[in-house]
Amino acid sequence: MKVGIINVTGYAGAELARILNEHREVEITSVTGRSGAGKRLSEVFPHLSNIDLNIDPELSGSLDFVFSALPHAASAEALTNVIKSGTKAVDISADFRIRDLEIYTEWYKVDHPCPELMEFSTYGLPELHRESIKSSPLAANPGCYPTASILGLAPALESNIVEAEIIVDAKSGVSGAGRSLSMKTHFSEVNENLSAYGLDGHRHMPEIKQELEQVANNTVNLTFLPHLIPMTRGILASCYVPLKPEFINSSSDIQGNVSEIYKEFYANEQFTKVVDSPPMTKQTLGSNDCLIYPTVDERTGRLIVISCIDNLVKGAAGQAVQNMNIMCGLPEDTGIRQLALYP
Image 1 (cartoon, rainbow, N blue to C red):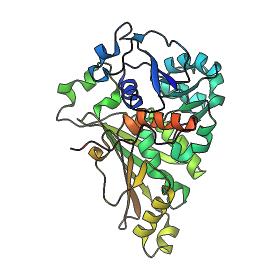
Image 2 (cartoon, one colour):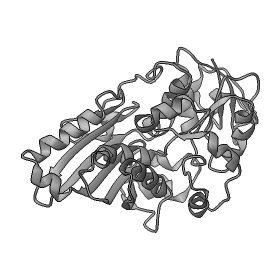
Image 3 (spheres, rainbow, N blue to C red):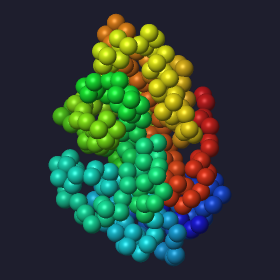
Image 4 (cartoon, rainbow, N blue to C red):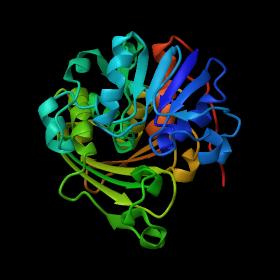
């Protein structure tokens, strides 16, 4: 299967190339990049020297599948002709994640460039939308924060054991901000420092809310607060939500019942795993796993869920390959079976 990557020169695009290089059903035949156009891929990323390709301004040749790792708006524009030609694709930007285009415009400050493609797209979170992804020509790869947050809360909302008042306190490594130079991600600014941002609203909030409300079949009141932490990779989301009194009153073993609900919900999932102790980001480093630990504060009647992913793998490139596998009828774990790196 011949595959192209639009914007291989970002972190997500480079991670896609690294993962796809080991995918037994894939040959990367075309890569593009804005800053690196005209260079060899190995010049920009020496660790990808096994992939003997030029970085071109546009895709070339006959392709069976395309990934776009461009920023929002630019990504939808780049994928328009791809989708219209009948080639399947995964978009790693936010362009097809939010179904309500007025909300998209409100949060991304741009009118959607290709609204006609929305009807062809599916939100690409396999644990919730696998059947739709199978028949979709375009998967909207979820954001990194939404992946961790939605997977952490979905079992509780689907089983109707919690109230709709949700707080997600999430922390991300610096690679989540992308590869473009910024004072906010300068080493001297982030090293030995921890900062909250997006207090007036983060772009991933409406995406999280959209999916949680679909699971709950009800409106949710969501507070989402992200933090930047001085490490390269990883997201840890701490989710807090009150348990319903009727669930508490009817449970002789609240913690045990919650654990059972979570383990049953993810029983058949290869990459989302309910664990028996609070996970650490290093336990997901380089892997496509999402590790989830639900627990109960019985003093307050509150469910606490810790959710961990690698933001560049399950939060971006790994999940994109997972979506491609589903869309192309391949075993879902093909090319993404890597264990975490430790230490």
